[in-house]
Image (cartoon, rainbow, N blue to C red; front, side):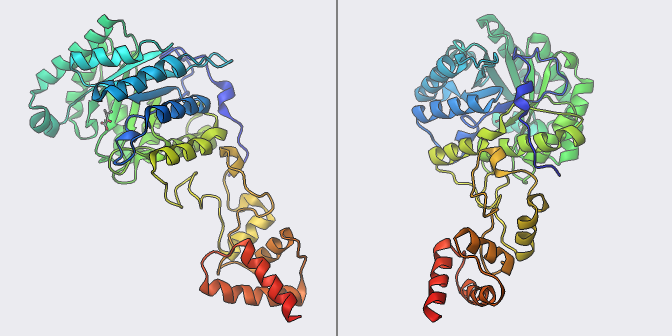
Length: 422
Ligand code: KIV
């Protein structure tokens, strides 16, 4: 496993929606400000949304789904402000993020979404309609033919408005009949859709199943070679990242995800997990897949979203959790002190997290060994060995039995006891 990580963003193709001809390039579509904001209690102010959008642009996401303009006047204003400002922030390499607004297939919604995004350099409208039997019958109360007709009418309406970057999602595709999906998707491609997003809305699919669905859709949908397929995986079974990667391996070239994996219910696929999996394993294990993300901005973005949404990630969350680069057991600590590749597959610095270079992420506790304590004492200015170190180690172990997490202050206090006893 390699800890060295060169940013892949330096190889980003000049962004012209859907004209990227690198077959291995995965577009990162961030929906923190839309699906992420649907997390119970995660509401952000318009100013906070604008800050997050600026940060996402720094991170290098290809598409920012800025909100659902029809859902409230505030959401419209936030999407409009993001489109005008962040959507025109062209970076020196020519990149500017696509700004996207979500919309139902109702014309009023589509008009509102287009009005909110149209001033961005690259505007997109994302429209959706459910295609699973249960959603059509109980939620929409529509026949399959009505669903096809509505979806086609929505895409045609967007074309008439002047929108030429159109994403369509068959909601609950993960539980829809694939044969019906071929029909709906073929019809919206013919009407002018440019990205087909395949949502596993309820997080029902297993990775091989979701990858298989993308493969079947690409093979059997008429006009599939003219559009980009996308994944949108919810995390109800904890499989959102795995399903998204399976989708990419099956040919999807856009992945929808959120910072820290926030989103409806158990959340969405986590941007940081997907990006780092592709950055570290894309070359060898994923047929050369790559993204345009600058990993060094991952941690500051994660922290900003935690602060603004009030949704803290669990300590053991992959990549950005407080323990993601912490080592507690004696065997691991000993390995880390000898060579950091023994227990870390990436550096904290590569995701923009700085830590004391001397402590190697070692957390002192009851499982820590003598070497780890000696090393921490050294960084605190006490160079001990032999019996002196044995003695402090004994007292450290006694303290660690009764106290969770030993701080540097505790170590200094142990040393002053030592001086006292001498
Ligand atoms: O989960 C879902 O199906 C969605 C769609 C609107 C893409 O959020």
